[in-house]
Length: 389
Ligand code: RFL
Ligand code: PHB
Image 1 (cartoon, rainbow, N blue to C red):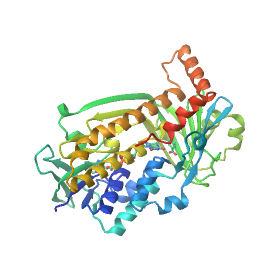
Image 2: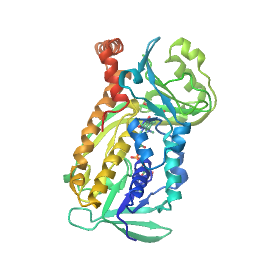
Image 3: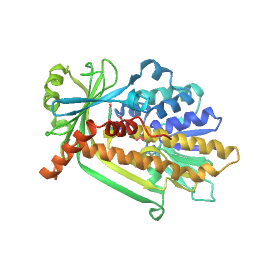
Image 4: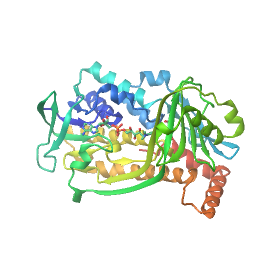
């Protein structure tokens, strides 16, 4: 098989890139190691920046998002029993949209199927070859026991943190930066109405908690847990009791609980690989960088990488290769700022086991300062809605 762009991974980055390229008339094939149902079963992000929404609009995949997505003009930060609102609309003139990553993925899959573009699911032993400068890249995979090969102009590595693309770049051509946090987020999805109209990020001596949502009838809640915890250790009752302890008393009293429909623990990590291109292989999304979820940036960064890659490839096929050359540097400028915000929000709102009482007081003072300063609230708001592209 021959195509212009072979995309590895059918997560949001790969599917969005495929749809944008198809809209521009650039031929592409997606190769994914899992089944479509498996990809749709992963419960992850929920908050979309305006940039992400505009890219979904650009490839005609935003119809359901505009109907069912919830525009949020603000969110709340809690410290002890105090709830403080960050008014995104007033501070930045923009808002975020609450719409699950699962739904984004579903919409993009449907748009791709409607356009009749090829996706190969359940591809085994995916290998990327000959992508270093000057050569003709190839992708090999095994499907139903047979070895297949795709010849292409470019490979887009949209295969997430554990994917094959970054791992195939010679170690001496990459520099990586990493920080692990000594805790994770235990997340529960439940068909209960959200406790508040907007998201609540809560700092508490027992640990961080987040009240999020997917719709007016489906809630997503998280509590900080030690890295050593396993989701199976946590009964629904234990989860709801812990969440309530970390919320202001009046908020906890309003919380509607119910059986969990998903429960999992996500580790928290900051990670960046530089550069995000090796010859004719590009990295985009979680394949190149990971942020802790506190700033709601992972999916949005994946989308903004893809936006740059789409522009670079459109220019390339019109005879201008400058965007391809600039791709990594353009992405990394935005990536590092989102890394900084996510790391900083994580540091501000979580309990760190090695913190001394002095460091805890510093956190108290920083949060109190930010929440009572116009400048401080603006810093949070403009990062949360997303820095300019
Ligand atoms: P994905 O979604 O991991 O997709 C990669 C795809 O590649 C496939 N793959 C392979 N395919 C072929 N061959 C191989 N060798 C392959 N290896 C892997 C995988 O099966 C998969 O289908 O990466 P992508 O597309 O870059 O998207 C990134 C986002 O998924 C991620 O950044 C966000 O979910 C992060 N995130 C959040 N981001 C936000 O913007 N806002 C949020 O509110 C938010 N909340 C979250 C989050 C992530 C979380 N977890 C579980 C890590 C909340 C949580 C709890
Ligand atoms: C979510 O709804 O899953 C979510 C929302 C905001 C975050 C992280 C996760 O910062």
